[in-house]
Length: 564
Image 1 (tube, rainbow, N blue to C red):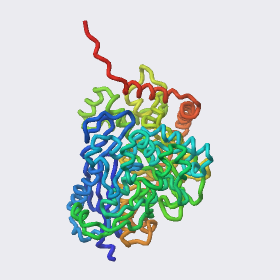
Image 2 (image 1 turned 60 degrees about the vertical axis):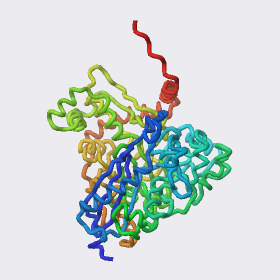
Image 3 (image 1 turned 30 degrees about the vertical axis):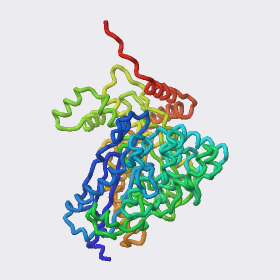
Image 4 (image 1 turned 90 degrees about the vertical axis):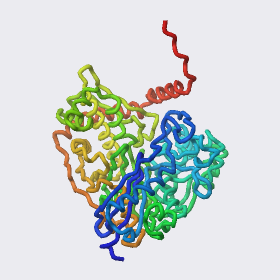
């Protein structure tokens, strides 16, 4: 195979859109990219694809057909922009936000496409940030501890509401008809590969981290029956399937998929993967101690380790979960960029928007500039970054955001900076959990859209006291998928070799400032006190407030009061 002429395509499926990148195999040079927004976006209030059915709190759904639209539009556009002959493409790889679940028939048809289920919310894709299965997740966790299940330690002692079994149990308990019609409970990462190849292959990454597959086994029938008698065969009948290892060949591009994409029929299609995990290869950061933080709407932290350890509150540790031969660790924060976006969209006075418009910059840029001008701690605030719950290390999506220290002197930029700091404190909490478990973190590598904020990057280096490296690609997951495609096509022996040639980062682009780090230590101590009080100290006010909100939203609407 001539690496000089060969290219691969990587497709990254994010929360709001899918992006295709064309990559040269010999050196990882990105030749072109194209993005396609999902037509239906995220359905978290109304089932816009159906009858306008109003959704309960904490739901997040998508339409599976939107993912195929990315193949129809973004891939051909990227090939055209690259100006290459499609015959040069030797493989395609894909990645997804996880855990995103598709209920399907035996042939892979999403249930939402069946006329009988068009208006049934449970028939649609449950996006990763669908957190309405928290009650089911709590029960799975409690039962695992009560029964002394060994596998619970591989997930930091808790199962997330975002994952396969919690969402599956919610489906059973809330819409039995849709549950019974579900013949496969499929990770979206595997569903899209199924559409490309005509073969259903379950990727080892999602199965291990999100599907509780450890040492070749899922939770036992007895365990599942204790959750619900009719849940006993869930793993056997709806989840279990052929497992494909990362970087392996899942199949060949079908004629139909070739017509969608404009790519040659029969080229290699890599086993599916998770967006965070493929990014480690894109940054050439696959050795133990190199923690890759993919920072966008949320943050996922992944790292290889050469030993198995029980790290509290992680999302999972999986043998070969990132790279064969290592234990792959994953942790994360449910809200990061989402929090900054929420604040700018809903909490900032109009005068700031006017100023930003007059200067030709975004509100984020203006607030960052104003916040960066402050000495550390000058705002007198500390926040908890739980606006979308806590993924690690508490694994509790009933938790919510908090701001302490506000006064009449507090300004918009003060709160904005406190929120930036809170997310950095959340990452430090994760790093310290790893260290205390005997899995040291020696380098923090950042990928994702937020690395463009230089102030935020320096803040993270100061707070974590780690050298912070940055990936050189703006499309880390898509590049990582293209790297895995090159391996699946036979251009490289394995992912490590391909990462060395095709992935790269700027080492220690930011280093800690000792004076700032000392000042952040004091704020971090206050963050930790609040973190433990509300997350571990038995104060369940956040849960009570969420329950009150759910009751209010589910109650019949009151008649409008008459005005005299």
